[in-house]
Image 1 (cartoon, rainbow, N blue to C red):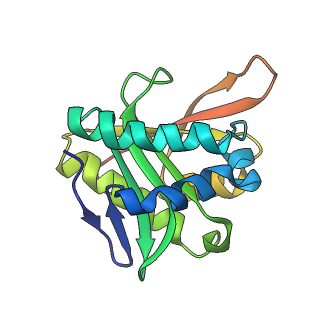
Image 2: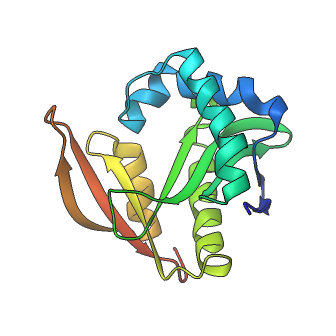
Image 3: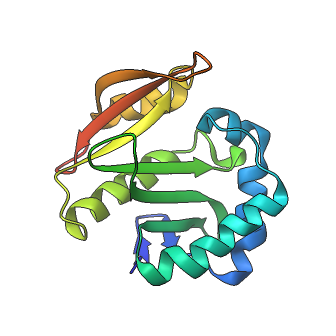
Length: 170
């Protein structure tokens, strides 16, 4: 079961029914989609995805997924899950643009790393970051991620596959 997590400023709270509009707004944001390397999904698709998280992911404990909250305000989305990208678990963080550059991403990743080690018993975790996403790549560099390889998409875009030990991130 996805637990509630807390860091110094952030609360990682499993999504509740009343969070659906926050989820949809964040994942419909053009800038957020661009830096996540994904196409902008329609509102009905995102609402269906939200219901799938609530009705399938949580009851079956498929993976961990949260809304991120700072002082009662929704600031983003986080996940820790197995994916086809890596032989392990991938961390995903998406923040609302007003919270970029304020240390929220760093704090969210550190919280995910602590959860991965303490609650999931993972020795390492992975991240996939677009080669053009210099801010996220710098965050990963500061925290001690290592570059494993570049993944080139069918459209020619490059994504950096990164790994980090869950023990003592910088």
